[in-house]
Length: 315
Image 1 (tube, rainbow, N blue to C red):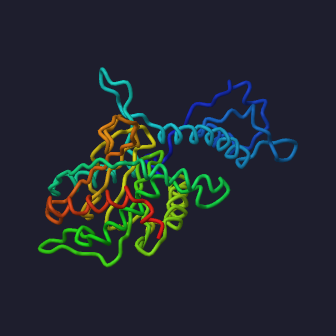
Image 2 (tube, helix red, strand yellow):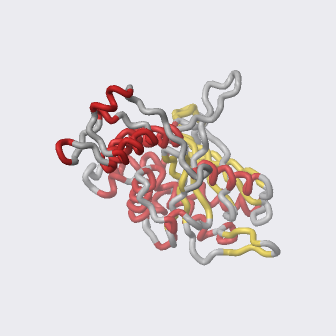
């Protein structure tokens, strides 16, 4: 080995007189000097406790391993630099990056417009209470207001099939099945599990499947194909206290429904009397390339009819 190839040596950690008292082979002493190992703390395994080269290298590894481990952990938790005035700077996860990219793909090129209706949710609440009175242990008692909304959204798309479509270059694709996407908030973002061919499922079947999909989405136990595709999406923030909102279309879908909470409000009945009523706001965000105002209004008219006559959703 040439001088240029020789590894630099570290000064021995012991004093010369201490080094002389340690029983060690010449090779062990040289390696200890190179690796910066204190021979006085190395347990020798050679004859009469003599320190060997193997002992020195083992001691060097036992010291270096925790340092390396700590360095790796520190590198993994590197915090991005914080500018003056910033409280924290949190790196985007892979999911949040994907959501950001899809939002740009949606709001950028897709010409959104919005239609909002107010639903008389009184009959819906009454139907929900009647099902609940069947007993908390029964399947029917577990059906929620959101389940009624999902079933109605699907059935309305069957009645007005032209909305069940997406834009595709110089054409639009009209889907044979209503593949219903359900927006589910999870710890790191948003997933949209899909109920395939939802038009063939009963209210109870939709209720069971959406609960299963939402549970597995929140526990990160979904397969990728279970939250890909979908012909349109329903996003319900009513449970979080939101009265109304507008949602961003999940491309390449043609529309998304944004559902608010059921609210008690004073209303005027058929006898011109002020009474307590239940109202719910639903906003439809449409891709204007696929759905125009008249078509969107036709769909929402059918949706309102179904939700205000919930018995139609039970057949």
